[in-house]
Structures are given as C-alpha cells and as structure tokens.
Picture 1 (cartoon, rainbow, N blue to C red):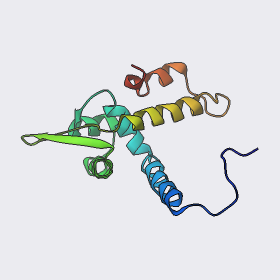
Picture 2 (cartoon, one colour; picture 1 turned 90 degrees about the vertical axis):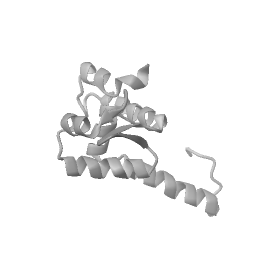
Picture 3 (cartoon, helix red, strand yellow; picture 1 turned 180 degrees about the horizontal axis):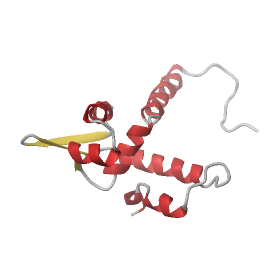
Picture 4 (cartoon, rainbow, N blue to C red; picture 1 turned 30 degrees about the horizontal axis):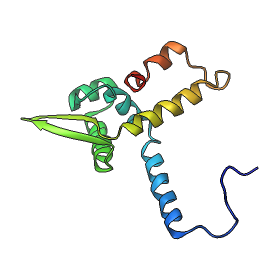
Length: 127
C-alpha cells in the first residue's frame, strides 16, 4: 500500500525543491533548544532574558537559536529601547510541534510522559 499517489516516474523539479524546503523546515525544528524556545514563547512575546532564564541555557546559545528562527520566518521580534522581544510569527510551527509531541507522548510504553506534562506543553496552541 502506498502512502501517496506516485507513478514511479522521476519527481518533478518543483516537487523535488519543495521536499528540500520542507526538509530544511523540519531540520530547524530538530534541535531541542529551539523546541524549548518555542514552548516558552508560544503563549506570547517574551524578552530575550526571560527566554534565556526559562530555557536554562546561555545567552549566547539562545540568541543564536533565536536569530536562526527569526531569519527563517518562524519568529518575529521587536525592539523597545535596549530590550528585544520575540514572538511566534508562524502559528503553524506551534501546531506542528504540539501534534508531534502529542503523538510521541501517546506512545506511553516507548516514551512515558505524564498527562500533566503534556497538558503544559505549548498549552496556548489548544486555545
């Protein structure tokens, strides 16, 4: 049984390029620190220092990840004086992450996660 309608012919160049872009998007989400950052700001904008504190990583590391996600259009930022605020610019990324986490957490015997932990994860996405 096939998961897609595929005739066995070579992929069209446009589809091949789309797969490259999607792969890059998933690659962006493949780093645990970035998921922690998304979880931290999924319910509203936060300052860089607040994100650093909540993620539990260094300012340099968090800033690197924030800049990468901003550059890819996943996050937006605004400056107020010396303070920089980040928020989600692509709400689909939160939905995608929450869906993946729900799926993995649902495999209790493989990845035990309490329902309390799951309810806290990206809770704003369920509103």
